[in-house]
Length: 80
Length: 151
Image (cartoon, rainbow over the protein chains, first blue to last red):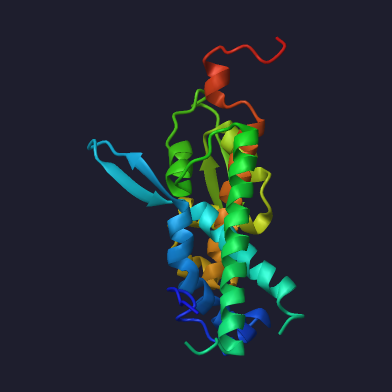
C-alpha cells in the first residue's frame, strides 16, 4: 500500500486520540494535514510589483480545519 | 509484496476520509461564495484594516464601543453596526486586537481562553462582518449617490 506524506506521519494511536477529542492529538493532526489544506486553498494574485504571488486563504483554512475535526469525531468515534 | 496490515488500512481509510471531507467542504464554500456573488477578501486582516482606514463621509460623527473598560471610537457607521451585530466575545477579540493592539497571546490571557480560541473567534468575526457588508449597502454606495434598489 503506497504511503503519502500524511499517512507516513499518521499512527492509529494518534487517530484514536484525535477522534476521542484530545487537543494535542488534534493539533498534531492539523499540523500533518496543513500542507494538504494549503495546497487546496492556495491562490495566485498579481502584486503591485507586477509579480504573481501565491497566498493561502487563511480564513477558509481555519474553517476547513474545524470541519475536518468535527467530521472525524462524528464519523470515526463509533468506528474505533 | 506483503498485504497491508489492519493498521495500514485503517490509516489509509482515515487519510482518505479527511481529504474527502476537506475537499467537499471547500467545494461547498466556493459554491456558497459564488451563489452570494459577493466580494470575499482573500486576506481578512487586510480586509478589516481596509475598512478601518476608510475615510468616513460623516467625519463629525463617531460611534463608540466599549471593551475592557475602554472606549473604542468607530468612525464608519456600517462597520459600527457590523461590530454591534457580532457576539460579544468576537467583538472583544477584534477591539482588543485592532484598537488596543494586543497580541493573540495577550488577548487569550485577558479573556482566559486559548490562543487558538482567539484565532477562531477572530475568523468567525471576520466572516460575520463580511456577511453583514454583503447584506447592507456600504457607506460608499450611499455616498456615491447610488439609488437604492427599487428607488
